Length: 224
Image (cartoon, rainbow, N blue to C red):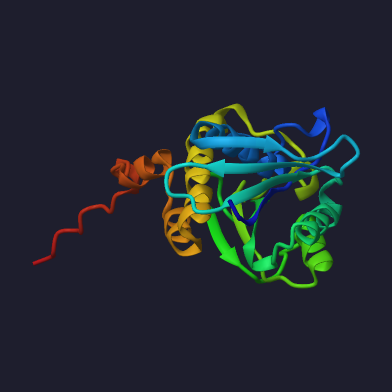
């Protein structure tokens, strides 16, 4: 079967960075590969000396092309070296690349699928833009929220709090579904799903009645 494109999840290699916010892309790739294994065949392509881990996913159920899935091992600020090397070797155009990465400007549990645009200070996206020579590739922005009371570097290199795990447990399978939609049906259906996703915890908060203290008081009685 022909090869359609590349899904690249961003993060930093090494145990000290495992499960940190900046490794959200790695976490999503792990879940994606697990689902791809249920839907078809996943074949490892990379060698020990490659600056990336690379798999080829051949899926059943209406997928009309194979996809590559990768995690760069070059550290975040050099992600573009791995992405460019893979895309050049397999003749993959930027328009057929989807990058999965953490996003400070979205709350945890939200995601946005887009193409093109700036890097918004994300060093992995910056590196990929530089190495590909264009910003015109797809990105799935995975919200991690903004830090409160400390710097962004410490925040993104920190791990998700215990109380955030339930939101992650709901969001990661939804993001996997969105990526599979992208692979099977294209960007528009995937964008509609990903951009419209709201975690149940957020839906419940929005539908809860306001506490008594937040409700407007009754207007004063009119004077005669």
